[in-house]
Length: 115
Image (cartoon, rainbow, N blue to C red; front, side):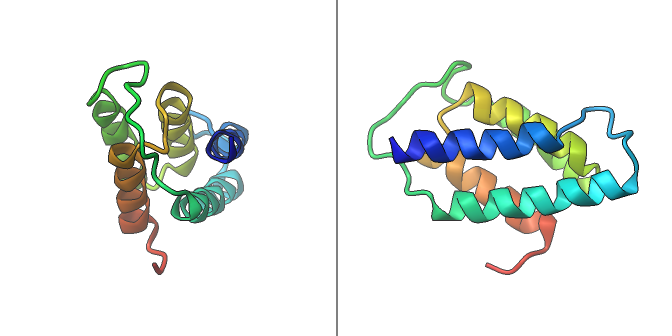
């Protein structure tokens, strides 16, 4: 239950700050950057699931979505990154180790925050 609540909290943050067009101005983009940092902290607090769950788009389907997040982060389009990451969190059980560890590694690398 705690993992599901945390996943809903993460999804709420991402949806509130997401915009695929990334056209809401620099201030909103900076807010989305801070939201991603908060999401990273929440992900680091999560304990990986012990039981396997398939997810809606298959075992490795999240990787294509993760590439979209990576591309947005490279371009510093943080609202788009929030939008793309929200898609993952909505479609996949983020507490699965394969997903959680990938999200943490990606956000840690491109957000330039300490571990």
